Length: 112
Length: 118
Image (spheres, each protein chain N blue to C red):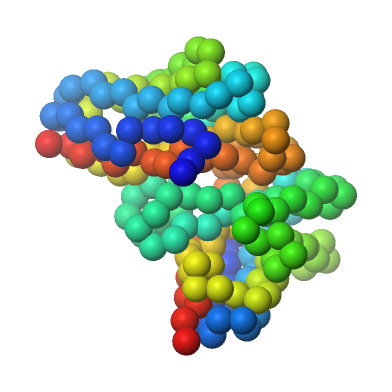
């Protein structure tokens, strides 16, 4: 069972907006640690798509956005495209784990 | 070009050992915190080990403590993960990754598959 909780799956039609939630606790997200998001295509290493709750690395389209509040965070993708179909993982740190990161269980995004 | 290339994966019997290597190019390993993350077949990501940028801090997930060791050779700009007393539930793709301390990871290797089976 993951320290951070994500929905197993979400789906949306091309052009639509989807959101993926990430729920933690007072020892991780609620303790002030930033939340980061990764996209993983099948058989490929994860790719960072958001860092520091809402910042996009160079090359990530502005269709990706993020927010954090209290013990939760969310990733939003607008103008959904077929290429967005992938697994998405949130990541943070936990005060009990001394340097090790924690991931959410992952969310499979299906573009209908 | 920034790149991390992993090697050393393979099929190994339970109880045996394996060493994974992660050769970095285009940046200096010792300037970053270095991580190993694994992914069992069909499962999510799991943090395995982390080394601070100066090498003074090494931390492991509970299931591998006492069995796995993270290290680096700065002269070769290479990160290692020594896996001892392997168990079937250690079967996974192992990724090396780099980033900040208590921050995000922005550089990943391509992954090395370790299969523990008799």
